[in-house]
Amino acid sequence: MKSSSGRVRLVADAEFSLAQRLAASVGAEASPDPDAVVADSNIDAVVVSTPTKFHRAFAIAALQAGKHVLCEKPLGRSVYEAEEIAEAAGRSGKILKTGFNYRYMAHVRKAKQLLEADAIGEVMFLRSRYGHGGRPRYEDHWCTDRDLSGGGVLLEQGIHILDLFRHLVGEPAHIMADASRYFWGFPEVEDNCFLLLKTKSSQMGQIHVSWTQWINIFSLEIFGRDGYLHLTGRDGHYGPQRLVWGKRRADHSRPQEEVLDFPPPEDSWAREWDDFADAIYGGQLYAGHVEDGLRALELVECAYESAGEQGWVDLSQFRQRLRSTA
Image (cartoon, rainbow, N blue to C red; front, top):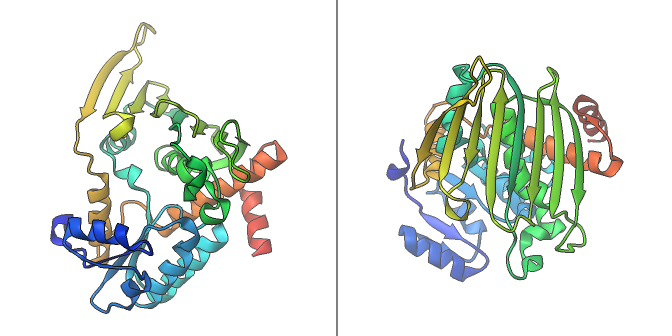
Protein backbone atom coordinates (compact mmCIF):
# COMPACT_ATOMS: atom_id res chain seq x y z
CA MET A 1 0.00 0.00 0.00
CA LYS A 2 1.40 3.41 -0.96
CA SER A 3 0.71 6.74 0.71
CA SER A 4 -1.28 7.90 -2.32
CA SER A 5 -3.81 5.09 -1.77
CA GLY A 6 -4.54 5.97 1.86
CA ARG A 7 -7.11 8.53 2.93
CA VAL A 8 -7.25 10.80 5.95
CA ARG A 9 -10.78 10.59 7.31
CA LEU A 10 -10.71 12.75 10.44
CA VAL A 11 -8.38 15.33 11.95
CA ALA A 12 -8.92 16.20 15.62
CA ASP A 13 -7.38 18.90 17.76
CA ALA A 14 -8.56 20.62 20.91
CA GLU A 15 -7.68 23.85 19.11
CA PHE A 16 -10.38 23.40 16.49
CA SER A 17 -9.05 25.96 14.02
CA LEU A 18 -5.86 23.91 13.63
CA ALA A 19 -7.86 20.75 12.96
CA GLN A 20 -9.99 22.60 10.41
CA ARG A 21 -6.97 23.98 8.58
CA LEU A 22 -5.24 20.61 8.26
CA ALA A 23 -8.48 18.78 7.44
CA ALA A 24 -9.24 21.22 4.64
CA SER A 25 -5.80 20.62 3.11
CA VAL A 26 -6.37 16.84 2.86
CA GLY A 27 -10.13 16.71 2.25
CA ALA A 28 -11.01 15.29 5.66
CA GLU A 29 -13.50 16.08 8.39
CA ALA A 30 -12.43 18.04 11.47
CA SER A 31 -13.30 17.65 15.13
CA PRO A 32 -12.40 19.53 18.32
CA ASP A 33 -12.56 16.24 20.23
CA PRO A 34 -9.55 13.89 19.86
CA ASP A 35 -11.62 11.07 21.35
CA ALA A 36 -13.75 11.20 18.21
CA VAL A 37 -10.92 9.57 16.28
CA VAL A 38 -10.88 6.59 18.63
CA ALA A 39 -14.67 6.30 18.59
CA ASP A 40 -14.99 6.27 14.79
CA SER A 41 -15.41 2.64 13.73
CA ASN A 42 -14.51 3.51 10.13
CA ILE A 43 -10.97 4.49 11.08
CA ASP A 44 -8.38 1.71 10.87
CA ALA A 45 -5.24 3.56 11.92
CA VAL A 46 -4.45 6.58 14.07
CA VAL A 47 -1.51 8.98 13.98
CA VAL A 48 -0.77 10.38 17.45
CA SER A 49 0.99 13.72 17.00
CA THR A 50 0.36 15.65 20.20
CA PRO A 51 2.50 17.05 22.99
CA THR A 52 4.27 14.03 24.47
CA LYS A 53 2.24 14.11 27.71
CA PHE A 54 -0.80 12.84 25.80
CA HIS A 55 0.85 10.07 23.76
CA ARG A 56 0.16 7.38 26.33
CA ALA A 57 -3.56 8.07 26.76
CA PHE A 58 -4.38 8.48 23.07
CA ALA A 59 -2.20 5.63 21.83
CA ILE A 60 -3.53 3.16 24.39
CA ALA A 61 -7.15 4.19 23.73
CA ALA A 62 -6.68 3.74 19.99
CA LEU A 63 -5.02 0.34 20.42
CA GLN A 64 -7.75 -0.82 22.77
CA ALA A 65 -10.29 0.26 20.14
CA GLY A 66 -8.63 -2.08 17.66
CA LYS A 67 -6.73 0.52 15.65
CA HIS A 68 -3.15 0.51 14.46
CA VAL A 69 -1.07 3.41 15.79
CA LEU A 70 1.77 5.50 14.42
CA CYS A 71 2.91 7.50 17.44
CA GLU A 72 5.32 10.37 16.97
CA LYS A 73 8.60 10.21 18.82
CA PRO A 74 9.17 9.96 21.68
CA LEU A 75 6.70 7.23 22.55
CA GLY A 76 6.31 8.79 25.98
CA ARG A 77 7.89 11.14 28.48
CA SER A 78 9.61 8.16 30.07
CA VAL A 79 10.42 4.52 29.44
CA TYR A 80 7.62 3.64 31.87
CA GLU A 81 5.01 5.46 29.76
CA ALA A 82 6.36 3.92 26.55
CA GLU A 83 6.26 0.42 28.03
CA GLU A 84 2.60 0.88 28.93
CA ILE A 85 1.87 1.72 25.29
CA ALA A 86 3.94 -1.25 24.11
CA GLU A 87 2.05 -3.59 26.44
CA ALA A 88 -1.27 -2.30 25.08
CA ALA A 89 -0.05 -2.98 21.55
CA GLY A 90 0.94 -6.51 22.52
CA ARG A 91 -2.50 -7.19 23.96
CA SER A 92 -4.29 -5.70 20.95
CA GLY A 93 -2.27 -7.47 18.28
CA LYS A 94 -2.17 -4.21 16.30
CA ILE A 95 0.81 -2.44 14.76
CA LEU A 96 2.49 0.20 16.94
CA LYS A 97 5.10 2.26 15.12
CA THR A 98 7.37 4.97 16.53
CA GLY A 99 7.72 8.04 14.30
CA PHE A 100 11.45 8.10 13.53
CA ASN A 101 11.18 9.60 10.06
CA TYR A 102 14.90 10.49 9.90
CA ARG A 103 15.71 6.87 9.06
CA TYR A 104 13.74 7.38 5.84
CA MET A 105 15.60 10.49 4.69
CA ALA A 106 17.34 9.98 1.37
CA HIS A 107 20.88 10.65 2.58
CA VAL A 108 20.38 8.43 5.65
CA ARG A 109 19.07 5.57 3.50
CA LYS A 110 22.06 5.92 1.19
CA ALA A 111 24.46 6.01 4.14
CA LYS A 112 22.91 2.82 5.48
CA GLN A 113 23.39 1.12 2.11
CA LEU A 114 27.03 2.19 1.95
CA LEU A 115 27.72 0.99 5.48
CA GLU A 116 26.12 -2.37 4.77
CA ALA A 117 28.33 -2.61 1.65
CA ASP A 118 31.42 -1.95 3.81
CA ALA A 119 32.13 1.19 1.77
CA ILE A 120 34.18 2.88 4.52
CA GLY A 121 35.46 -0.19 6.31
CA GLU A 122 35.03 -0.87 10.00
CA VAL A 123 33.25 2.06 11.65
CA MET A 124 35.31 3.82 14.32
CA PHE A 125 33.12 6.75 15.42
CA LEU A 126 30.16 9.00 14.71
CA ARG A 127 30.10 12.75 15.25
CA SER A 128 26.98 14.89 15.05
CA ARG A 129 25.84 18.47 15.55
CA TYR A 130 22.14 19.22 15.33
CA GLY A 131 20.11 22.21 16.38
CA HIS A 132 18.39 25.51 15.79
CA GLY A 133 18.12 28.85 17.53
CA GLY A 134 14.58 28.71 18.88
CA ARG A 135 12.00 31.35 18.04
CA PRO A 136 10.38 34.38 19.65
CA ARG A 137 8.69 33.48 22.95
CA TYR A 138 10.12 29.97 22.76
CA GLU A 139 9.54 29.69 26.50
CA ASP A 140 5.80 29.49 25.73
CA HIS A 141 6.19 26.52 23.37
CA TRP A 142 4.95 23.18 24.72
CA CYS A 143 8.25 21.39 24.06
CA THR A 144 10.00 23.62 26.63
CA ASP A 145 7.47 22.69 29.35
CA ARG A 146 8.72 19.60 31.19
CA ASP A 147 5.23 18.45 32.15
CA LEU A 148 4.12 18.47 28.52
CA SER A 149 7.34 17.29 26.89
CA GLY A 150 9.24 15.23 29.46
CA GLY A 151 12.57 16.90 28.69
CA GLY A 152 14.40 19.52 26.66
CA VAL A 153 16.45 19.51 23.48
CA LEU A 154 17.80 16.01 24.16
CA LEU A 155 14.34 14.44 24.22
CA GLU A 156 12.90 16.70 21.51
CA GLN A 157 15.71 16.53 18.92
CA GLY A 158 18.56 14.51 20.35
CA ILE A 159 16.46 11.35 20.37
CA HIS A 160 16.62 11.37 16.56
CA ILE A 161 20.42 11.30 16.62
CA LEU A 162 20.46 8.61 19.30
CA ASP A 163 18.18 6.53 17.10
CA LEU A 164 20.46 7.11 14.11
CA PHE A 165 23.48 6.02 16.15
CA ARG A 166 21.72 2.72 16.86
CA HIS A 167 20.65 2.46 13.21
CA LEU A 168 24.01 3.27 11.61
CA VAL A 169 26.64 2.26 14.18
CA GLY A 170 25.26 -0.06 16.85
CA GLU A 171 23.98 -0.33 20.39
CA PRO A 172 25.67 1.93 22.95
CA ALA A 173 26.95 0.27 26.10
CA HIS A 174 28.05 3.37 28.03
CA ILE A 175 26.92 7.01 28.00
CA MET A 176 28.28 10.24 29.39
CA ALA A 177 26.27 13.45 29.08
CA ASP A 178 26.00 17.03 30.21
CA ALA A 179 22.70 18.91 29.98
CA SER A 180 22.92 22.68 30.25
CA ARG A 181 20.73 25.78 30.23
CA TYR A 182 22.84 28.45 28.58
CA PHE A 183 20.41 30.97 27.15
CA TRP A 184 16.69 30.41 27.32
CA GLY A 185 16.36 30.08 31.07
CA PHE A 186 13.74 27.35 30.96
CA PRO A 187 13.21 26.36 34.60
CA GLU A 188 13.24 22.58 34.09
CA VAL A 189 14.58 21.64 30.64
CA GLU A 190 17.97 21.96 28.95
CA ASP A 191 18.70 24.02 25.84
CA ASN A 192 21.96 22.17 25.08
CA CYS A 193 23.12 18.61 25.60
CA PHE A 194 26.56 17.12 24.97
CA LEU A 195 26.92 13.33 24.79
CA LEU A 196 29.56 10.66 24.44
CA LEU A 197 28.45 7.14 23.55
CA LYS A 198 30.57 3.98 23.49
CA THR A 199 29.66 0.54 22.16
CA LYS A 200 31.00 -2.73 23.53
CA SER A 201 33.48 -2.79 20.64
CA SER A 202 34.67 0.75 21.55
CA GLN A 203 33.00 2.58 18.67
CA MET A 204 32.36 6.13 19.83
CA GLY A 205 29.65 8.71 19.32
CA GLN A 206 30.10 12.44 19.92
CA ILE A 207 26.79 14.34 19.81
CA HIS A 208 25.82 17.94 20.48
CA VAL A 209 22.16 18.99 20.23
CA SER A 210 21.27 22.62 20.77
CA TRP A 211 18.53 25.26 20.89
CA THR A 212 21.23 27.95 20.76
CA GLN A 213 22.54 26.99 17.31
CA TRP A 214 21.69 30.37 15.79
CA ILE A 215 21.96 29.09 12.23
CA ASN A 216 20.20 25.75 11.83
CA ILE A 217 22.50 22.77 11.37
CA PHE A 218 22.17 19.06 10.72
CA SER A 219 25.58 17.42 10.43
CA LEU A 220 26.31 13.74 10.93
CA GLU A 221 29.72 12.22 10.18
CA ILE A 222 30.68 8.57 10.30
CA PHE A 223 34.36 7.65 10.09
CA GLY A 224 35.61 4.20 9.16
CA ARG A 225 39.07 2.76 8.62
CA ASP A 226 38.77 3.25 4.85
CA GLY A 227 36.81 6.48 4.58
CA TYR A 228 33.95 8.54 5.86
CA LEU A 229 30.38 9.65 5.26
CA HIS A 230 29.24 13.20 5.97
CA LEU A 231 25.51 13.88 5.92
CA THR A 232 24.31 17.47 5.95
CA GLY A 233 20.96 19.20 5.58
CA ARG A 234 17.47 18.13 6.42
CA ASP A 235 15.70 20.39 3.94
CA GLY A 236 13.81 23.52 4.92
CA HIS A 237 15.88 25.86 7.10
CA TYR A 238 18.52 23.15 7.46
CA GLY A 239 19.37 23.15 3.76
CA PRO A 240 19.10 20.39 1.16
CA GLN A 241 20.21 16.86 1.91
CA ARG A 242 23.75 16.02 0.86
CA LEU A 243 26.02 13.04 1.44
CA VAL A 244 29.78 13.27 0.95
CA TRP A 245 31.48 9.87 0.63
CA GLY A 246 35.18 10.19 1.32
CA LYS A 247 37.57 7.41 0.37
CA ARG A 248 40.91 7.27 2.16
CA ARG A 249 43.93 6.90 -0.12
CA ALA A 250 46.69 4.41 0.65
CA ASP A 251 49.30 7.19 0.69
CA HIS A 252 47.16 9.27 3.10
CA SER A 253 46.92 12.15 0.65
CA ARG A 254 43.67 14.09 0.42
CA PRO A 255 40.79 11.58 0.24
CA GLN A 256 38.81 11.16 -2.92
CA GLU A 257 35.28 12.48 -2.41
CA GLU A 258 32.01 11.66 -4.11
CA VAL A 259 29.22 14.17 -3.50
CA LEU A 260 25.63 12.93 -3.62
CA ASP A 261 22.85 15.52 -3.59
CA PHE A 262 19.23 14.70 -2.84
CA PRO A 263 17.06 17.59 -4.04
CA PRO A 264 13.56 18.34 -2.70
CA PRO A 265 10.86 17.34 -2.26
CA GLU A 266 11.77 15.61 1.01
CA ASP A 267 9.86 12.32 1.10
CA SER A 268 10.68 10.75 4.48
CA TRP A 269 7.16 11.27 5.83
CA ALA A 270 5.61 9.53 2.81
CA ARG A 271 8.09 6.66 3.06
CA GLU A 272 7.39 6.32 6.76
CA TRP A 273 3.65 6.14 6.10
CA ASP A 274 4.15 3.57 3.34
CA ASP A 275 6.20 1.44 5.73
CA PHE A 276 3.47 1.66 8.36
CA ALA A 277 0.74 0.83 5.84
CA ASP A 278 2.70 -2.12 4.43
CA ALA A 279 3.14 -3.50 7.96
CA ILE A 280 -0.61 -3.28 8.53
CA TYR A 281 -1.13 -5.40 5.43
CA GLY A 282 1.32 -8.07 6.54
CA GLY A 283 4.72 -6.65 5.69
CA GLN A 284 7.68 -6.03 7.97
CA LEU A 285 8.47 -2.61 9.42
CA TYR A 286 11.76 -1.19 8.19
CA ALA A 287 12.11 1.19 11.12
CA GLY A 288 10.29 2.57 14.11
CA HIS A 289 9.57 -0.74 15.79
CA VAL A 290 8.33 -0.68 19.37
CA GLU A 291 11.85 -1.70 20.40
CA ASP A 292 13.30 1.31 18.57
CA GLY A 293 11.06 3.64 20.56
CA LEU A 294 11.84 1.96 23.87
CA ARG A 295 15.61 1.75 23.29
CA ALA A 296 15.84 5.41 22.26
CA LEU A 297 14.00 6.48 25.40
CA GLU A 298 16.30 4.33 27.52
CA LEU A 299 19.27 6.16 26.02
CA VAL A 300 17.66 9.53 26.78
CA GLU A 301 16.91 8.62 30.40
CA CYS A 302 20.38 7.13 30.81
CA ALA A 303 21.90 10.36 29.45
CA TYR A 304 19.88 12.44 31.92
CA GLU A 305 21.13 10.22 34.75
CA SER A 306 24.70 10.70 33.53
CA ALA A 307 24.23 14.46 33.41
CA GLY A 308 23.03 14.40 37.00
CA GLU A 309 25.92 12.25 38.19
CA GLN A 310 28.53 13.85 35.91
CA GLY A 311 30.03 10.53 34.89
CA TRP A 312 29.81 7.49 32.65
CA VAL A 313 26.71 5.31 33.06
CA ASP A 314 26.68 1.63 32.12
CA LEU A 315 23.53 1.04 30.06
CA SER A 316 23.00 -2.57 31.15
CA GLN A 317 23.16 -1.57 34.82
CA PHE A 318 20.82 1.32 34.11
CA ARG A 319 18.30 -1.08 32.56
CA GLN A 320 18.49 -3.32 35.60
CA ARG A 321 17.71 -0.36 37.85
CA LEU A 322 14.76 0.58 35.63
CA ARG A 323 13.32 -2.93 35.84
CA SER A 324 13.82 -3.18 39.59
CA THR A 325 11.85 0.02 40.20
CA ALA A 326 9.09 -0.71 37.65
